[in-house]
Structures are given as structure tokens and as C-alpha cells.
Amino acid sequence: MAATTLGVIVLAVASAISAAQKVGFEGQKRTLAAIAVNDLLSELSTLPYNQLPAKDGMLQPPGEMRSLDGAAYPRAFWAVGRSVTVRSETLTDPSLGVPVRGVRITVEARDDGAALARAELFVPEPRP
Amino acid sequence: MTAARPTRIRRGLTLLELLIALSITGLTGLAVAGVITAVARGVGSISDGRSAVQRAHAAHARLRAYTEPALALLACDPARGIALWLHDDRRNGRVNLSELRVFWFDREARTITVERVQFPADWPPAWIEQSDGVLALIDDPFAVMLTQRAMGRTRRDVLADGIAEWSLATNAPDPRDANRLRLTLGVVAGWNTHDHQPEDALLTFGLANYFRPR
Image (spheres, rainbow over the protein chains, first blue to last red):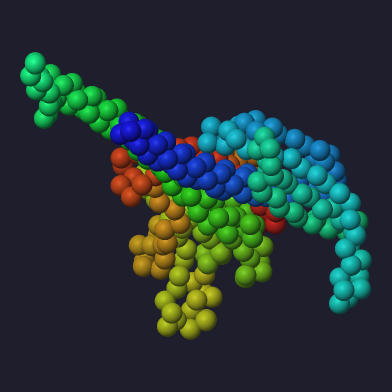
């Protein structure tokens, strides 16, 4: 009886700690994903406009992230990967009624399952 | 007629039974203590990792607030810091003292600080304009900032703490030609940051408004 009670208590405590750790790890992963997404978007914003479409479909699986210049991300980022989509788009400012052509860059960070963070940037086409 | 034999009633434990029970209790206690210690160590390690990640994230956000609008890198020296041309408020295409920001890494204090020139508040605009000199391309921005500091005309703020190491890289050999900066930080956790091993974090920054100063 005593042994059973002790076992149940230990199991309950262990499962509570495990759940807390899982939640903490998920939060940590999302923070790293936010850094990774902002980093890549910031780097892409430095490229000439005509080079942006070539980045569409860029994929870095979890644990294989690299900066635009080829530097590997450290082990803290092992669970995070990211991808890029670049789509042509025309935005119209409602107050001016002026259409602005450009590309929308979307960077999404994922783990093996779900999306963790996502950021977008509209880059207008430069004047010829 | 035979008399009924008296029944033996046990009123306690024998010494042997008591010793066995105590040993089992002791072993169980030891096992539970071992499990709790291991779990506590694991929780502590995860908590340290989380704390380091939060520090890296804070450093990232604060540095980004400077790099996003910045026009150019002026110098990048792992031993001293980063010099940045933040804006061109004087609209002359050149770096004035008030447009310069220097990020210092203090290995002892484990901090990254940002320093800028701040003229006395009671100075009239004409004095400030006269003192807000232009940096020549050959000037060392770190030395320039130290000179201003010696005159009591700078302000320093801590941007990040718990930074044990840093390394810098740019996408061009001359930082003035670079529009991307890579910063690897060794971030430590906890309040007493000297007790922890650093966790590496890579932060990259792009200068979307890059403009080479004249």
C-alpha cells in the first residue's frame, strides 16, 4: 500500500515536471525561431531587387540553418528550420490610389511538425 | 479432558523485521532523493538555456533597433567594438559626431554598451552645430568617441548583459563596404553570470538602407 502510494506520487511529480519542461522548451524554440526569421528577412532586405525572386523556395531544414553568407547556426538552433517564399504583388494605397508593384517576401520558421514563427516584408520595385 | 492451549499473540516486530523495514525505507528514500536530484539538475539546465536564449533575444532586438535604420558600418573590431553610422540628420552624406554610434564589448563586465555623442543640454544650437564635426574616412571612430568621452560629451547605455564572448564578421573585407553583419555571442544564464558556461547564439543583421559615407 505504502509502496503503491509512493510510486503514484513519484509518477505524478515526474509527469508534472516533464510537462513543464516541454512547455518551456516549446517557448525557447519559438524565441529562437523569431530570431531566425528576423535574421533572414533582414539579410534578404540587403539583396538587389532582381535577385530576390531567386530566393523563392529556399529551404533550410531543422538543424541545417545557415546565414545568407554561409555561416552555420550554433547548436542552440538545432530544432529550428526555415523557408522563404517570394511572390510578386501589387499593393494599392487606398488614400492615394497609386498601385505599387513589388515582391512580398515571407520567411517561416518550423520545427519537424508545426510553424513556429513567420514574418513578411514587402519590397517595392525600384524605379528604372 | 485436555486444557485448551493458550494462543500466542504477537504484539510487535522482531528486531530482524524492524531492521529489514528500516533498510527498505532507507533504500527507497535514497532512490527518491536520487531521482529528485537528477530532475532538479535537468530543470536547472533547461532553465539556464532558456535564460540564455532570452538574453540573446533581448540583445538581438536592441541591436536591431540600431542596425535596421543604420546607413553604414564604419568599423568592426572584435577587440573594441562596432561603429555605426546611424542616420544623416545633417543631410551632408558624411558622418557627423551626433550620427555616430559605437557599440563596446566589455569582457570583464560581460556587457555590450552603446555610446553616442551628447552635447550639453544648455548649449545653443549654433554651438552644437559648430561642435558636431564631420568624421574623415581616415578617422578611427573608436578613438573619436573616446576623445568625446574624455570631454564629458557622451552618453553610454547598456544594451545587453551576460555576454561572455563575441565575434564579428561582415560580408565585405572593409566594413564600410559591408551591408551585412554577423555577430556570434557567447551568452550566459543566471544572475551570477560568471558561474555558467556560455551558450552560442548567432545573430545576423542587414543594413537595408546602406549608403557609403563620403
